[in-house]
Length: 78
Image 1 (cartoon, rainbow, N blue to C red):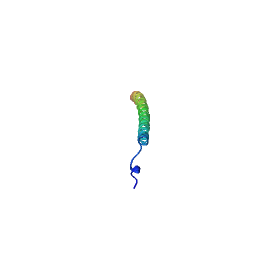
Image 2: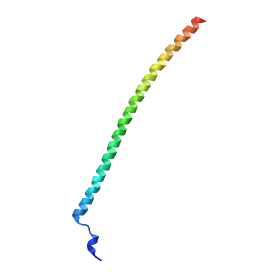
Image 3: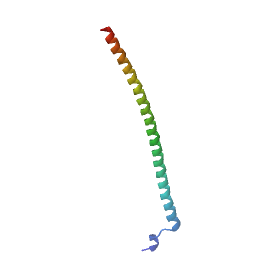
Image 4: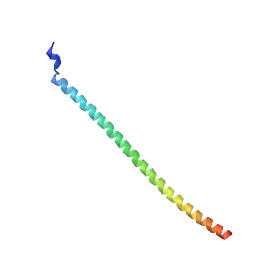
């Protein structure tokens, strides 16, 4: 049996180790990009929810005014 097959040349080992680090860095970059995209999406959703809440507040004020007007009209009519 040949004992030379049990060993890896140093430059081969360094190349394979470098490829592992490249894959780790690529994976890290993908996760960072996905996290940034998610953060932007969440920020946008929060902004849209704030606008919807403000619009709902205005609608409720208009409904209260309309309700008061209709009550006055009903009281004056009867």
